[in-house]
Each structure stands twice: as structure tokens, then as C-alpha cells.
Amino acid sequence: MSNSSNSGQVLSDLEGTQILISSPPQPPINFIPETWEIVEKIEEETVTQSEQNFIDGGGPAYVAGKFLCRPSGAQGPLAFLRIYQQIPWPGTELQKASVRAAQATGPFEPPELQALKHFKQKSCKVVPDLLGYQFEKQDKGDIIPGGFVTYVIWKKVPGEPLDFTRFWNCTFSERQNIRVKFRQIYEMLLPFDYQVWAPSSTKIIYEWSTGEMHISGFKDATNRFLDKVWSDAHYALHDLVLVDPSIKSYFPIESIDLERDDNGWEW
Image (cartoon, rainbow, N blue to C red; front, side, top):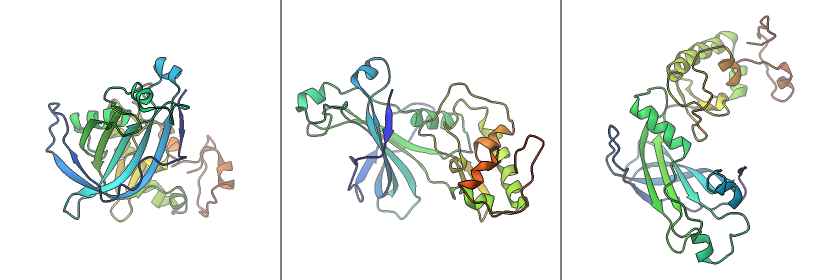
């Protein structure tokens, strides 16, 4: 089993770095090569993997860093870049380069890239647009000589992840307006072959001033066991309905206009 953590930083001090993204041709998707400049690091996650789990099909070990970036020499538009870089199996980090190089795998296409490519091929308009991707190999002096490095870049859509507390401190009518918009957007996503894994309100990108909304957060996208029919459970999965009122003990809600339905759900 793989394990995710945020301890340690591998992809550091990259602000100002310029990266030429030249996506491999894959009709009907065609990208124009473009150089992007990293503006700010947002987060880094480490996915560890043992040698045996890798042999058993568990996938490679890697770090995934998310960055805010923009076209080189321009002030916008902004985009997000994720860099996936292979790392050694636990316990081999300090072994000689030839040992680490033996762990190198071929190009790595993460679920996030698979999903964003699928959405672009099928012209899905409710997710951020894929702007490019690239597969590279690490240099001889890197942590895994010859190991993979994958770049995935997508458009930064208007708005921010929907904040749980802000949503639940809105009036009932404001919450209902957001739910109506969410259902409209999510029903447009359901026919496609990928969905967000571990959905929450943070997967909803919402622009409060205009009501514009997108679904994002496909780093751990899944194409298995998809529910392609709308149900109100999608509200609950995205924190737009309170199924367990005890959550208010952990996230104080000031709204006094909550409405409880026959299932005990609070709206």
C-alpha cells in the first residue's frame, strides 16, 4: 500500500524557474509549446511505495508539487502546474546512484493527467482546461537518475475552493442558490468517465461575485465505480448538506435558518 505525507520537501526553491512545456502530439489534442514561469509554490505531497508493492502493481514512489505559474514574460493568465518526480523506495535514499537508477521507470501518466486529457478530448466545460503536459527524465545527478518527471499544467479558473464555514454561514436562500448551481454543473460532469476522488466542498471552485463555478481537484481522479446518475447524495459528499449534525461541534455554524428534512439532513 502506498502512503501519502507532506513531510520533507524535494521540489523547493523553484520560484522564477522557467519550464518549456512541449506536449507530445495526441490528436485531437494539439498544444502549442509554451514556456511557463513558476510564481509560487502551493503544496508538496510525498507518495511512498515499497519495492514489493511496486512489483505487485502498486505504482511508483514520487513527490507531487503544485505551483502557481504564468506564461514567461507575461502577467497572465495564471495557471497551476503539478510536477510529479520519482523518488527512491524507502531505505534506499542514501544508496549509490546506480542502485537508485535501477529503480527508474518509464513515463508516468498520473490519474490527474488522464482525467484532464479525457475532459479536453470530450470538450467538458465545467472543469479547468488542460493547457499542456510533458514527460521528462531526471538527470544523472538527480535523486533517481533516469527516473520520470511529469509536468501537468491547467488553467486557473475564476474563484477559490468553496469554504465550508463561509458556505454554512450564508443565508438559506444563498445556500440554495449555490446548491442549484452545483447541481447544474455536476450533472454536466456526470456523463464523463472520471470523477473526483474524496469529494468535498474544496473541489468546488466558486466565484462569489459572479456565481461562476467549476469542479476541480482531480489529482486523485477515479474512473472506477462511477455513479453517473444524479442524487442528493452528491450534495452531502460535497458538504452542501449536513448528514451528521454533530459536525457542528467541530465546525461552528452561525446560521439560524437550517432546515431539516425527513432523513434528518440539514440544509
